[in-house]
Image 1 (cartoon, rainbow, N blue to C red):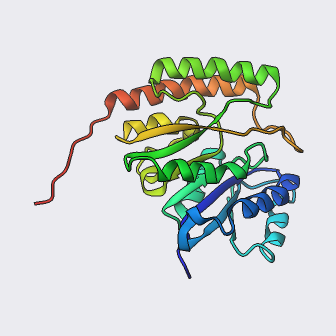
Image 2: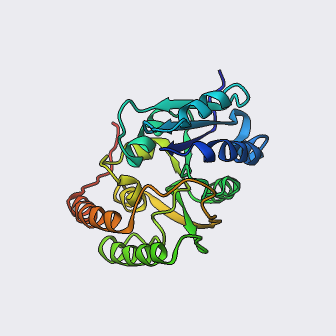
Image 3: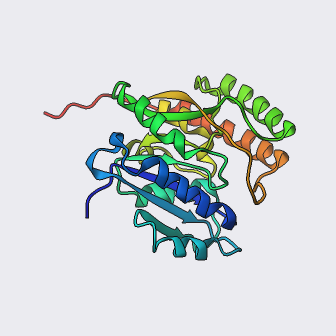
Length: 245
């Protein structure tokens, strides 16, 4: 079996109506793309123990989408754990992530790949930047407020860490400290590891169906606690160059 050049990891929970359109869009964006070289791509969906028939829809798609792999959490574990599960299972050296609600546009993945190909090797994360968000006014305000606090505390020079579409080196990701909700702090964590990150403007779309799994209050309360933890990790980090003799 040929090792894919890219693994597209998509965490989902109760997204049965968004699965088929998003898988088809990923295939349309990536099949035959020259940036993927000879290995092509794979799609790794991680079902976080959905209570609807998301898993059945995914299993049905495997018959017509050979690139599709499906993993399922035995217990609901959250988005960060689902992303990490997918990255650990990924066979590609580079990983792109998408939110399972369809608001990220798979057509932006080639844009991230093009940015990677013209960037220096020390850049290990290319983070989507939703310059024209299609969320509710309250959600945009909450995100703007959270981004301002995070930027002041972590100084990660990233305008939008909550965007689900990202491209990163698998090995670098797996070297990061793991904790719940870590997916919201990937730029700061990558920089803590000694790597550089780049923000890339991407498209953002309205949710076509289903409901958001977060509300602004829960996101804010969890975010403040996590923010203090990430700031502590950054302060306590130590890196050194290693020579083999």
